[in-house]
Length: 188
Image 1 (cartoon, rainbow, N blue to C red):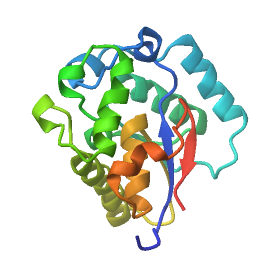
Image 2: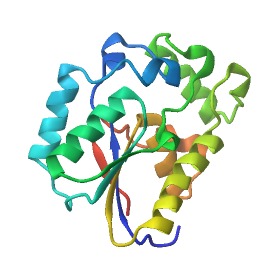
Image 3: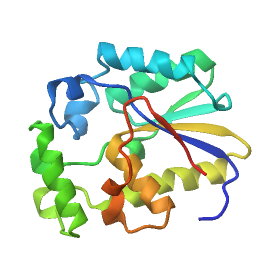
């Protein structure tokens, strides 16, 4: 990847009510208006701000799911910066696993690692996630210069994006350390 004109901070939303319920919420019908942050998620965001080591953001872009919206609003309010919804930052669609136990993530990720096609189960392909997530950065590169941009999204899409940026096979995305709720990763 060429050097970027902007600084990108990738943030996973804080702990959510979906995390608390241990269920998969990946469809907009379920995630846009429900399953916001838990009390723990709010505390994680406060801790994130208390230990902020990065440049002050110029703009926060986020998925339209409630948990990412609330996380982004927290940052934008604290740093007094613009906030922008971008649906390309949404959670990976987990198809038939929607509203089921989050223990089923492991079976999806095992199939990802084996290079199996999960689209028959309605699961969004790794390539599709990588392309839409990277398109957000490409759009920002075309629109901004010398900006610090926070992209607030979800764990799986962020790991897939980082794997893509590293130039590694997307099937290896779960070999990366998991991104914790309210954790920020600087794109270098």
